[in-house]
Length: 339
Picture 1 (cartoon, rainbow, N blue to C red):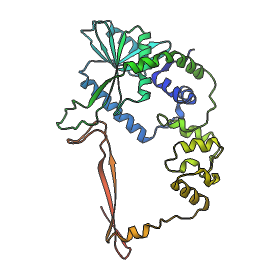
Picture 2 (cartoon, rainbow, N blue to C red):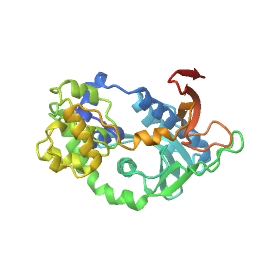
Picture 3 (tube, rainbow, N blue to C red):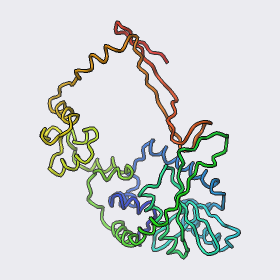
Picture 4 (cartoon, rainbow, N blue to C red):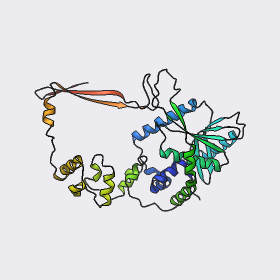
């Protein structure tokens, strides 16, 4: 049986062949963090709102667990005149054992427009690949997709009137960028089919586990690997390209890295403290603290962001405080807490 791929599975395979294989053969090993699930839920809410902002249309009701029903429902809607059904949401297409669902599919008399909606504030590389996969499948299924649009959040939008989100969705024409990627899709699909039908790939964890998104199989894969060093190189703040250079040179534990390999004072300081276990206190700290009068207030607060603003006067992704805690230090060193 040929392995069936989807847009999301192809994107998983582009990130890591092992991730794709695990999604198909050991899906129970995935672990979505609460934070990741919250982001997904926010994206879903924005996607649903975008349907109204795009002017409404007909939703293909069959969910992602009922692919055949979705394909049949889509075909029936497309068989009707475009004047009766000018816009479909979650339209389903299949080509060469690849299945996709399209956020928005706008029909015209002589062409179609594919619309992908993302809860981000700009077009990202992975979004272009999303659209390229969908366009390739839709064209393979017989549709004449001539334009591809990317819908994302306009973060300059301010929620001023209850229930009025006009202006929150921004559409960008990405047709040219998508067309440039289309020639690569067939070979990617063929390669990932071989991966899906083969043995589990032997791939160790690394930076690819976080690019472009953190992989839900990360903890599963790490559990299969020998324990790493006690102080890995990436404990260095803002390590960037230095990480690649040091690992390529064979270093794994920060304590083994010679000082000559570190050019930034901050990195040298962190490495020295790590090697010696000694405490570092800046010479400037005493003077800075002496300038702060008593009583001293230590404020801790938590914030939350929403893709779709909840409260009037707020913007998408605005950091909104929702709780705080304040500790007060007296000159004699005693502390008390104020809610």
